[in-house]
Length: 156
Image (tube, rainbow, N blue to C red; front, side, top):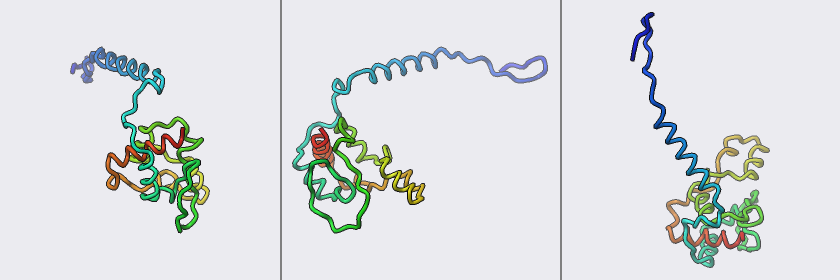
């Protein structure tokens, strides 16, 4: 700190070189990762058993709220709701990793269909939050791998 002739304290000028270098390195890495094709980036989640994933989808009653294009699940005796369509035309190209992030953190991406429905009835809080249950305590890693493999294969 230094004082001016009027007695005002001034901070000593900072060396901004390290900050600039860190920003340049970060932007270079981010650009190089984003410029790679999705096929070049290997998925984190390995391939699982899609048949077991389908059985888990049914067992965990995911079909209460979700449909999978081209797959028929047993009818559940539940009140009618607006279904969220997954693993179909809307989600073509989603990877196992993306499905896993949606299951582990449903707040990550909230369905526009859900948001519209909630805003239509005037529930702004519900429109900003995913109604999906937290399955983190109910799924093993093997379960999650099988489930996302089923969803990825159903979408593509």
